[in-house]
Length: 136
Image (cartoon, rainbow, N blue to C red; front, side, top):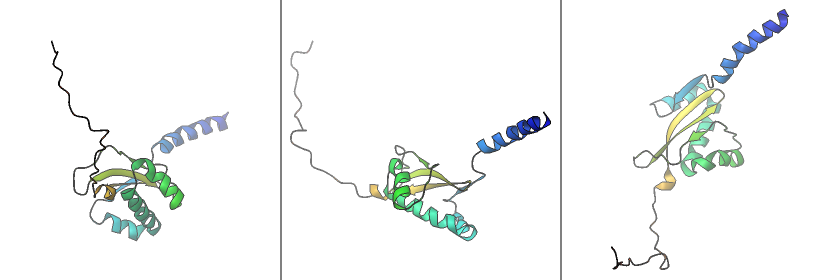
């Protein structure tokens, strides 16, 4: 019985720690933060550069899959909102990702949105407005 009670206490103490998530958070937009990561953890620094580069070119929905297939990085905790852009030039998107219990956040420039394209409208799509004369 003592072992069962000790096991129950150990599991109850371990569960909140497991649910707590990453142990620390690093904002990569702070001055010197990326350099500090390069000095402290070169492996994370190399992965972060790849993640940021891919995130500039891909949408939020596809970035994690592209990182997994093309770069061999499995980023399960990558979060960003494809419908929210920061109104700057170039537009930026806020994203977070977790590497080895460290949550990284950054505002990533969306370079695929830099060159807007004007496309001609198809003639079948454009219709003249009609005037309704028999309105009450």
